[in-house]
Length: 326
Image (cartoon, rainbow, N blue to C red; front, side):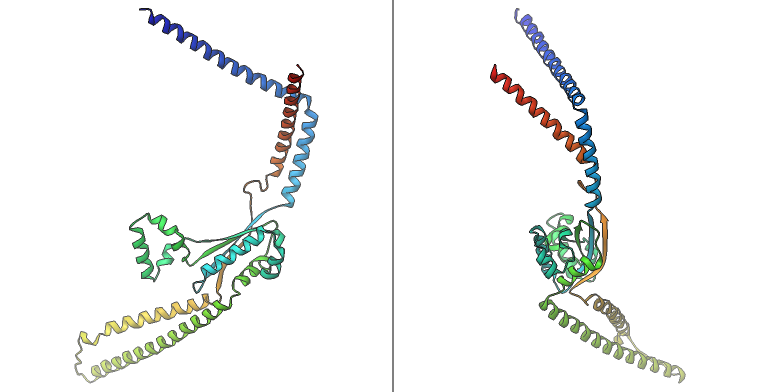
């Protein structure tokens, strides 16, 4: 019978302690806010000076250290994507090591100290990957059976075989085609091995085109002969019988495919004039990520914060020293 009153007393004690703790917490917060107000009031001049210095220095840094992003869309030909990836990684490592001699003498960058970083990423285009390539379609289909299609499309094994890749790099000042784009492309295209592959590859296409022209000419001769036969029979009022064994429709389809193939080869030759073909470039995109362009806001706050931390450290040191003396 006496258990219930004891429980009520314990609950009242717990609630009282909790309310006291909450009240003490808010009192400490209000006391801390009041001390901060007193601190800024005592040091308003120093805070103002540091704020003005931070704004002025921030404006100067934002004006003199602008960062720009640059992009080049390329097509690595003749299976050279691994070679291109290795070359881009080498350039990036030289930038990190601040090897301006290599960047200037070997790569040909005009102002290597202004180059911040470079990377290459595939442009995801699964339709181009499987266009006119049944084996690629079957590969995607097979790989997607055991996993997510999106994951398969973005896997390195698949993505590195996409026709287009994006080379992106940043510079501290504005750049130009002559300063960075052409030196990078010249460096990537300077490969004796792939130059030999390019020569033989283009030569094979030209041979194939010559053979296709010969076959198309033969088909045209056959069609002209057939047309003359039909026309002659009509003039002589004689009937000419022919059946499906002539496969005339297949001959016409074959010609159509060969003509389409010839057009594809002509475009292909245009794109094969370089080991790494540049399709387009976009330069001097102002970068406002992270702290870029925001130093006029960050530095004043940083200077004031450091001043406050220094004041708190000084106050803490005095309190500890007074405790030791006591």
